[in-house]
Length: 387
Image (cartoon, rainbow, N blue to C red; front, top):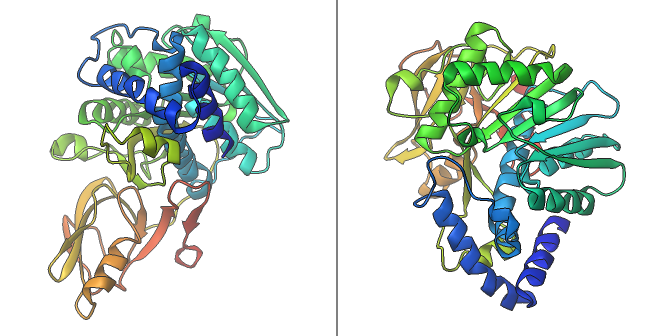
């Protein structure tokens, strides 16, 4: 893929080596960034690590592909399940806190796959070095028909953003850059972002799957939906509060299988991160008039457990948590594993039973997987027969 090849070349230029030797020398930068994002995370201002070509390349090889696919997965749900589309003939995307373009370029790539041959992408970030890389990366991956601009600015200060309105505004993994904003401040920020949306436009916010970051985003999402500031279209299926916030045991996040690029797998040999899944939380908002969803849908908010004689998982249905058990009698162990692999956290299912805190279905044929993303690809499956 062009995206992987671009960042491998960046790594080769940064460490003056080629091929596997370049990736080997990039490992130390990946480890340093991993520590910065976790154990050595600063309380306030992050350093401009993108100013260091070696760290920029390390980010592009290891972290960027994961954020790219997370963005694609979130848009998979908004575009396929909720059927959101930009209203403009030439959509405009604003990527706030763009870094080298992981989320904004992914969004533009997604819209191109929907048939928009021409569009514009503008990145805003504090790091001039990241913006230079974003422009080059976007042109490499997106090709002709996409206008790419950048502007040095602050995610928390709208006066530093470019003028104009946009069809899609992406804020990927940047709420941590606004630690001085409390809940009321974040709501005000969303209100200011909404003013930059064109009619029918969408705001997409992505955050890590950590409990603290996911709950912060979910509280903001519930507040936006509850106050009517802007309608929520994903991942929640309605405007009701998320019951996980009150239970305290679980928190809303996605977990999706994907196939990491070979270069990402290579530099992971010393980090030993589990790259079988990407995990993240997100919220999407829009005032667009979208088709309604059918009744009886539930969203999985847990992994699927294989227990002797049944599958067990937790869903949210009509604003309530529901523990669902599916008997697997008559199925072999292989068949049970195969069934469990057909759906998972974040998927949407449908069954005809009344909502209940604890529900045991008659058998495994008593429900349908209504929507599931397909391993991070820009397609998904929707069970049209269940509509």
